[in-house]
Amino acid sequence: MIPGPFAYAERWDEKSDIYLGLAIERAANAAVVIDSDSVIVKPAVAEAHRPAPVQPGNGGGAQGPGETSPDTGAQPDGGTPQPPPPERKPTRFTGSVMISSERPAREIHQIVEAIVEQLTTIPGSSVKLKLEIDAEVPSGLDRAKVRTLVENANTLGFIDKAVE
Image (cartoon, rainbow, N blue to C red):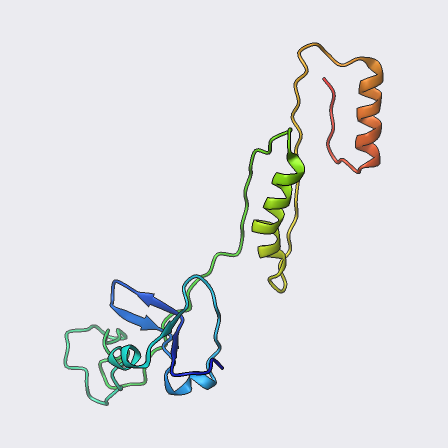
């Protein structure tokens, strides 16, 4: 629980001008997830955006069967409120980046801190990394260099390797 006079919302929806997942009184029992969408709300602001209570028989609009009232979430026939459909969250991240051959360790370290650690700290996540090397040597590779490269690639567990 966050100490102090605060409310919590899962996110702010600009289109409908409402806080989604607003927790005021139940804030002590609310599941609080801090991410790029979540917001901490001042109590006065939260009260001004408090959802209207559901009132039976409040369906005087022109909604069709099974539709919900946008202001209360109640069905037009006075039935129980329908929960909003769960938001489908992205489940995959992929990315490719060019790394300088002059300072690869520094750039790889930055990528590990900024991306890989963000993903590996999520419980249940599975993160795989793949390093691709594409080198061109206009003067050509001599036999000893080819042997060294192939042996080193084998020792380091390279899955794909080719010298052309």
